[in-house]
Amino acid sequence: MAAQGPVEAVASGQGEGWADPVATALLVLADGTVLEGMGLGATGHAVGEVCFNTAMTGYQEILTDPSYAGQIVTFTFPHVGNVGTNDEDIETVNMASASGVRGCILRTPITEPSNWRSARPFGEWLKHRGIIGLSGIDTRALTARIRETGMPNAVIAHSPDGSFDIEALKAQAAGWPGLVGMDLVPDVTTAQTYVWDETPWVWGAGYGRQESPEYHVVAIDYGAKRNILRQLAGLGCKVTVVPASTDAARILEMKPDGIFLSNGPGDPAATGEYAVPVISTLVESGLPVFGICLGHQMLGLALGGRTVKMHQGHHGANHPVKDHTTGKVEITSMNHGFAVDRDSLPDTVEETHVSLFDGSNCGIRVKDRPVFSVQYHPEASPGPMDSHYLFTRFVNLIRENRNEPALAER
Image (cartoon, rainbow, N blue to C red; front, top):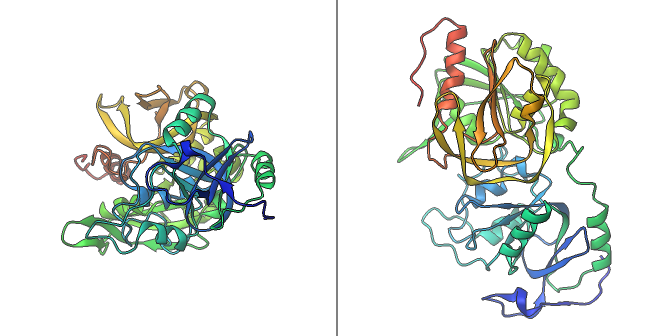
């Protein structure tokens, strides 16, 4: 970018810990608003949609979740990075790859890590993964703005010398088309088929390995998280992960006992151009099907419904959801900016879960087939295990299909 000279940091944006009056990072919104702060992590600039996440923990999992591709995450909790980073709390299947998140925004500067698990400071980790960070702005004000006006398109930029071509950044932010109509799955899906065998973490032992699988599940990777695959493996599933573009005939040739539709980023209607026909065929096959997040949205499309862009989306680890099938309320983790429109669903589909924040749809099932999905992330464990029963519910559909007795839901 052509330099225009350093940007002076305004007093209202400085906050505790600022020793340098020159802003080294900017958030430039599509309407021309410029927010100034201090840069960290990678340098350069990136364009995306700004959302806010209300979780108090799990920043490493959030920034490696492929569902955040194309987005800039604002953390509402002020202290981020204080426990450092490690090699275990990563959700992308390829630990060395970027998740697709465009940047992160923090209220306070990163402090030295204080945790026995820390292997690398947060700032160094961001730089290693190519994620641009910005600290020192009023994240409460930015969050309030998103709640009032919706998630804006923006450019996040970091230049250590504080020089920016602000007009060029404004033009880039204003010119970005946004996530509606954007298929981001090709950026995060696997390039080849592989078998997953890692099981959930156990205190004192770490992650295990699946050695004697009872069932075979084919997982279509639209941006799958590691812990989802671990949960399936932990319940006795051999998990064959296939690229998002895999056709239904190829999947059925693998003779699976069940099909899993993974989470992922972008507009479900755009990805659905090639994914929905595949999902429709798999549903018609009679096999048990379980979807999460983007997989839930595209299952809704395949069943005849439609999806809508949300005003501010759901991003956080404290979202209450009611399961109509049990009457219980779960504390869930969410990350989505699109939702299934319940009014568009046919009579053959039943709504099973609903958000207690705004009443939006959070789960569906087909009345006459072993097919269901949820909008939230049952593997993320904010409850901590409120929603793990869904994986058992999926395995029980497989067992029922094989004329085997059900397992107790847990």
